[in-house]
Image 1 (cartoon, rainbow, N blue to C red):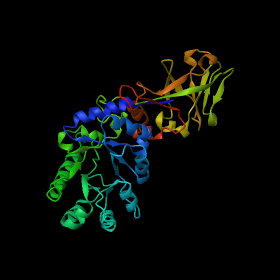
Image 2 (cartoon, one colour):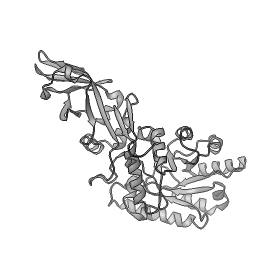
Image 3 (cartoon, rainbow, N blue to C red):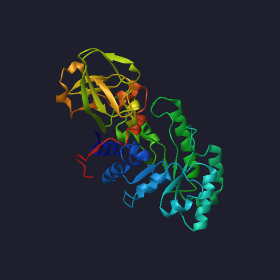
Image 4 (spheres, rainbow, N blue to C red):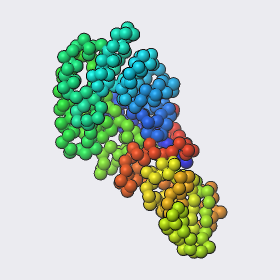
Length: 367
């Protein structure tokens, strides 16, 4: 059972809104809200006041038009593919333009369709992934006709090292972005600006500008590593026990017979394996909690099942059938699992398989 606490997601958004010193807070719900369900998460955030959402692709954004209320503002981080301009305009989606070619195509589409469809412009300030380089940005600002034809409503960039508070690139990116903002503001006095991701919000007011773009923090991932997590936990994962075996003699466990347990050992087989993302979620030597006691996996994980050594519990098999072993909870948190398995909270969440039975907790906020 994968339990997703929507009230915790709402509380996390409200906390970020309180930190924002007047900046609006969007919701990054790309990749199906990091695997937790974009429709459920999006509407939960809308209920507490979120009106701007970011998606990775046009397909995600189009799907969102079907479940988010019509007054939401939807950005497409992946920009535009040639030929998609009319679909974006018709669907009232805002592309994030990351290159001069995309800028030119969007301006041309607005002219051809007689529209004034909005866009966001992204500049590369140090991530060196998406965005116009500063030289390209300066060229765009020098061509006011082209700039106005794209109808930009947002200038944005992305922080590369915000989770390392003292990294020098944070201040470098801030200064570069501020300079670009000052260059464009006289041309577009109503333009808004956005730089801070989840960790960037905690760097301080200077990084906030007009719009904050949290993703990870909404879902309980610690935006300030190596300090207490200010966000509420959102996910809980428990795996149902489908068989318990008492060994009548020493026996090898699992594929390749890499591990053996002695006579009298108890092995619990749970539903859930690497096809469900457990290889990244719980690691090669996974831990879980059964009746409040820590147990560990034994043998190689299978596609659909995982085995735990529960010998220390001394409980007969029939008593455990129908119970579950918790593999993500308050003790086995996303932060703990990330450090233990040398992975990222993002990886853990987006790896959680679609086969889990899901339960959404609405909590204190009506969704």
